[in-house]
Length: 320
Image 1 (tube, rainbow, N blue to C red):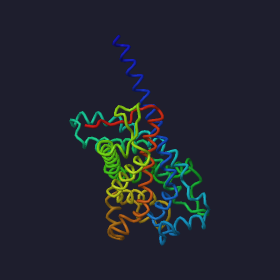
Image 2 (cartoon, rainbow, N blue to C red):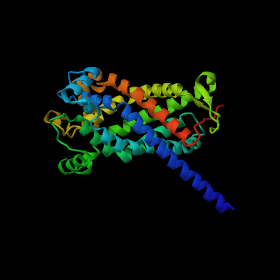
Image 3 (cartoon, helix red, strand yellow):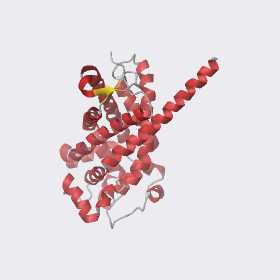
């Protein structure tokens, strides 16, 4: 009898993880495709591409279409999709696993959600970081000046010419350090805002959903609003690490970027600060980052919640 219960529990756990992986992966693909053009402009601005360094967000988008073509707005998005499905699947599922474990360790303290989110983000980065580096290289290229022909060619070329697997993990340290506040705050803020909506103003922000333990889910607009605020707050703290990561990832691309080679994370941070300052260096491209981060995180959390509802997974929270 006990063996039957254990088998049933294991089956339910496997089913939950499988569905959660699917929901997270699809959510990631939706969110990244939504902001792919803004992602490409952000990379070009962050790394001071010589064709775009004098441009802003909207003029940069217009120049990409004029100088290259409309589809160039999505350059590197193929590599992004290859990366984002396992990344988002791992991140969301890891969060679902870590949340009760860390919650029990911290006696259900509200900060446990922050640490669960940070741990989930780090887990996802560990598994998928080389694909992020490859995607950045592809997105940085300009039509007519291609060095890489695709994902596989980029990986092989970097491995052969730039020191093996270390090249694929260049910028990993600032990514992990940035992921701690970014992923932690994203999940913490979304869960907190979701809780507030469901507890204090459910008549406006919620609708019935019988599959959930709480009996309610956020309405679509409320999901998007909570996700957008969570993304804006998280990006404000983590952005300098994102700029540092991009500089390190793209240091081998063109001769004018070679001055960033071999500096390490703190050396790169220091040089960005000394040469360009805070506003035009560490926070360069922040305006576009808000434009992309808010809808990206909003769509990501909303898609995940909707996928969980579609797959009959509980998305309710305990209201005390």
